[in-house]
Image (cartoon, rainbow, N blue to C red; front, side, top):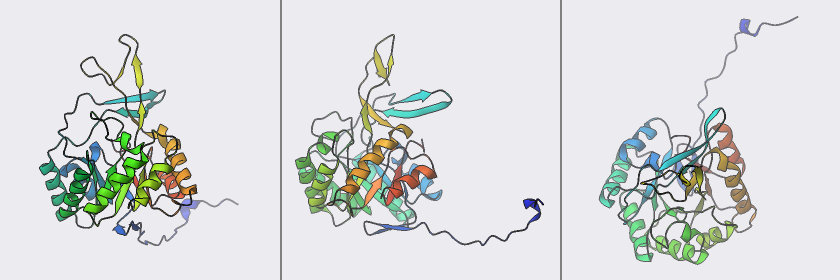
Length: 299
């Protein structure tokens, strides 16, 4: 005898689902944050994301550099039946003025006090790292994320060049710690063999958690007529950061290696890299991440 399920009336209890977490001592409505990128680079973008339910944002990296962006800055790696499987960018840091960025953070905290703001920063020396951290705290940020991992920077000694050098990681983490009482995350570069080495240097110098991974240095889509890679700007090309679904296995590998290290086993990790849906998110949580950051899927 067959039972027609449509004839059954089942009462489903309407229980509220609590997705809130405590991450590095900061209470978050849920673990889903925008990562430090173009999707979290001004007031309007982040305000819309907050109103749609995102728990927080790692705001696009703020510095004292004068950033001049090129265009186009993005290119996609496509495959049959899909719009893209990977994404390359040559995006740098925030190209808004320092004062504009401080105002964005101040207004976001005023208008969305229950949301979590992670201020991503990058300095050129210890003095700048300390000043940046202090200023972010003053305007209401809840956490600081040290960008030790941007794969494309015009000046030497910035971005991924820091993350590849444990001594620089330790020195700049200590400088940030000097400037703030807020929780500090060190964002790691995947352009290295053993991420746990600079990660341990950051924690020993005062970092409360790790963010991993940033984009992977890449060359994409060689144009056969010009022998240039995409994106091309005024007839020139450059290495850029690779992201999207295709980098997820790499991100999970680095996170797993850090989790297996006894010195990092209990250190909070904000995970990112190829998260497109709830299954991807669950994989990062099962690997030991407490907080998640997303960009490419939002774009």
